[in-house]
Structure formats: structure tokens, C-alpha cells
Amino acid sequence: MGIMRSLKGWMIPITYLIVWSASLILYWIFFHYEGIVAFNFGFIWIILPAVTLVLSFLVGLKNIIWKWIWPFVFCLMYLLLMSLTVFLGQYLVTGNWNMPDLTTTIFILVISLTGFAIGQLICRIRGWRIRKTEV
Image 1 (cartoon, one colour):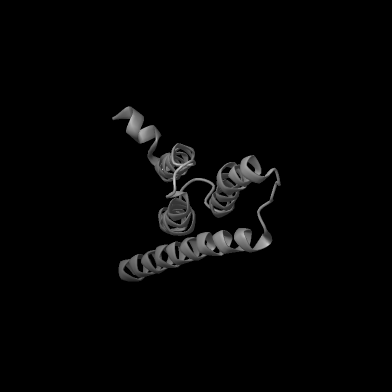
Image 2: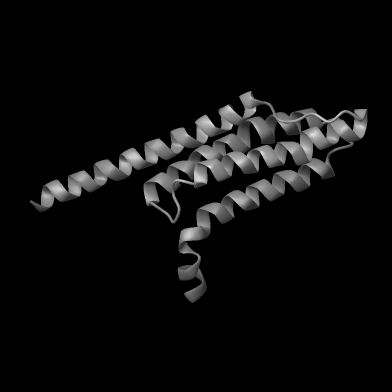
């Protein structure tokens, strides 16, 4: 019970780190197989942005510690994942190193900030309704 209480505010970042680590490991397991393109599309363009949206929403809703920095941390982790999977894989195959572009950064940051803003909005509306009913 004591461990769960101490981890309460960190469950959202830990969840993101688990999904992030799983996608990194699975990428390199399937790197030499034909399904790598489907994996890239599935994990990097669907699953991880969806997880980012949901967890950013929960960060805004639950008001966890350092709430304003988490959307930017999610964005940096996404870019790090892209660098450690797709771009490193391209480098190993072709010898050319590509860096993440601004479009990718804006894409994931907008998703994260959207989830965060919706969570904050719902949190504020709840707080407003609770205060209004107390009066």
C-alpha cells in the first residue's frame, strides 16, 4: 500500500515510459522483417500519439506534479523514439542520418497540448460546479 501511495502521482509518466520502451524494443526485434513498415505506422503514427493524447488528458484532469511540463516531455520522448528507431534504422541501412523535422515535433506537441487542454478544461468545470453547489 505504501508503494502505491508513493507512486500515485507518477503512474501516468510510468505508463508512458512502459509503452515507449515496448515500442523501442519491438522495433528492433522486428527490424529485419517485412512488417517493419506496418509496425512503424501502427506504433509511431497511431498507438503512441493516442497514448500521448490520453495521458496528456489525464495529466490535465488529475493535476499531477509538474503538470505544465509533461506535454513537452511527451514530445521530447516521441522525438527520441523516432531517433532511436526510424532514423537510426535508416542510418544503419543507408548510411545517411536524418533528423526529426519540425512537422513531427509540432504534430506530437499539438496532440499532447490538446489532450492537456481538454483535461484542464474538464478539471476547471468540475471545480466550478463543485464550488457553485457549495454556495
